[in-house]
Length: 205
Image (cartoon, rainbow, N blue to C red; front, side, top):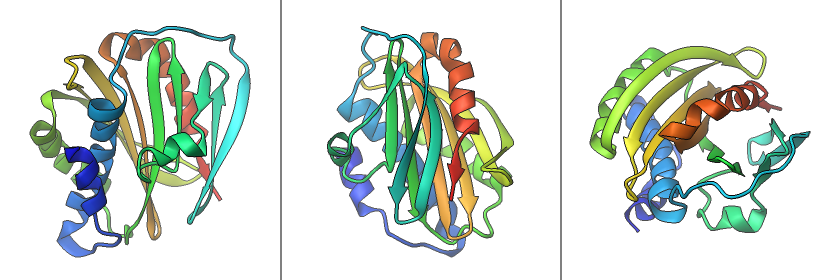
């Protein structure tokens, strides 16, 4: 599995001019591994009544908090293990099918410039995905005071489905947090409000 092998080759720490390439590869390959190898975007099947819940995933970085509604379900430790450590936590919804994941990196991110990172993403997604198209990017504030790049684009998956992805990258001292949310192109707008609320609830302690 090409994406899985690429993830395993990523180093634990980088510095200097290679920082942007490392950030992009880690973020994009984690998504690509999910979309093209593990869980193709099939049509939705079931749903449940909404009821707010909260989850936290612990990692070497401390605790990560994220609010999500009951129409979503959190992946168990066993399910996460299938991704070979690609994600700290992940949640999904089945109607429509949407996947949101959080990944962390140990990296000296003090000098990361978010606009430069966006420019690098502009170039990298065209090389990585079929029929890729950038839709937007902006800078938002998460976890109280930290700035993060929010980047949205679409592409065609290996199963020929048109997928839209919202990628949020938040540098925090010696860590970088990646939040990615993906759904079929035709389903994304129907869950945008939920995704925005969940991402805005993201907090690290």
